Image (cartoon, rainbow, N blue to C red; front, side, top):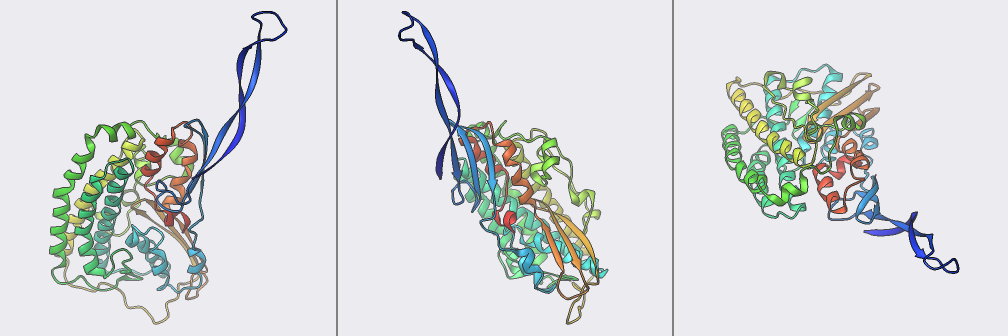
Length: 396
């Protein structure tokens, strides 16, 4: 954390004049300085290599500028020199807490270009895995956010629940974070014998223990004082900056692609969209907690449907060299942190001519320049943590 002074104004001091009569008063201006402070790019409050350049008047923030790009890996350019099978491994890494959701957007875009119909069994399995991945993402933030405000215990509970679900995700895919289980045309392989039963038990265990996390935090006076009324985002600001996901819904923006533009099997599921109206740090945390409950319900519905489906293929047979026809398409999905969009342009070759990624975190953190000014430095930590971003999702 480094600082540099910047002269911004002056204040008047009344002093006794000299040579102008006893008790004479004359104004005198003394220059004052604001402090320009760099938070990051490596700082405990920034979740990674994000830099915030803030201007302080005392302890109050006057201006804030998020500076990104320290982790930039050029994924969009790498997409152009990898074929449609290889780009999946690149795409699942930008938001390392939502790898399955990242893969999903790519394969859906390619399948649309090909006009390919995915087997029914794969559609429901994808939906189930997407919701389990959503729970894993949210549990990470439900544990880490209180930790940033000084509450240590919730993170241990959250990681216990994450491990419960990680076991079944690792069993089916072989990976703990980067699953690489999606394929163009379906999934890598069929579900292991007995996996549905083990997943149902894991979902039930997490649902049963979730109130422990909620009870630790919901009545905590310090947590409430640090989050209520802090970092309020208006619906108008949400629209202007393209903020999406739990952050937008915490400000009353009732929009969720799973319900409003269904993909996979969401059109056949009762997707409950969780919203709040306060738009503050506390509302964002509440939305995340309630969304975990909704995702667990959706996972149960998917498990029930998968048990009813007859045996069948889990993917489509693909040619040795996969080429998408010439054209373009846009596929967007409701990822855990917000809207993930993939704009795919093909010239009929085995590699994309262009694959533009619209990541949720990139748009979401831009609004920091609007909500940080006027707040204290201590509140900056609470606001920054409540934006629920992943730095790789910003820098891609």
